[in-house]
Image: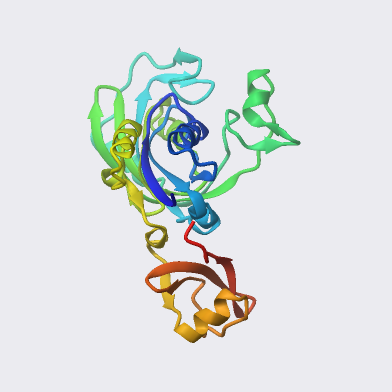
Length: 289
């Protein structure tokens, strides 16, 4: 079994938990994921099965899309509803136009300091491990890029918005900054990933749906290995080129594309990269396993 499963991760499960669930279901040791989601976050999680795991290093779109919900007037040590929450503002007076204006002010490239409750490591220790001991240390800022941010809905003191942001952006920290910009405070109360690596939530399946289809021998949920790198161009090998390729003999491919899928007989047989002024084969998929 090989390919990609576009999973809707449920709350209260880590990304690793989802991998373990499917490993037991499929009886397949070679399973991995890309784009870790926090345990309480939900939405699109890409799971790679069998030889498809070789594609994980090449399958990273620079941006991800989320729908986030924030609650005004609260603070939290984790910057979200799942931490130690405190009331901060008794009166909240912001208009829809003010909210839209503040959201728009976060568009573009900026610097963001990661929260203490994160899996970033410092001297071999994860930051959240230090935070749980009451230790706070200085963190280096990261460059983030907000390509799109738009108000979706306002319900009382809850603001729901859609955002397309660069990898490594902490939406919790962004929401904390948005609350400050509104002369209030805010914590994240929900986060749904709508798109990851070009796969949409509308195309994804729940774990329950996947298990039911698998037990019925219906593999509609499995995306073929050739279709995983949607945005990558293909190069079709001739029969003579494939003979060389399959025995490890170098073949000349004239291209300056940063990444190419190598195709033969309507299947993916390799991945190549253009770097250091030349094109090199990085992965080969020569078996049908």
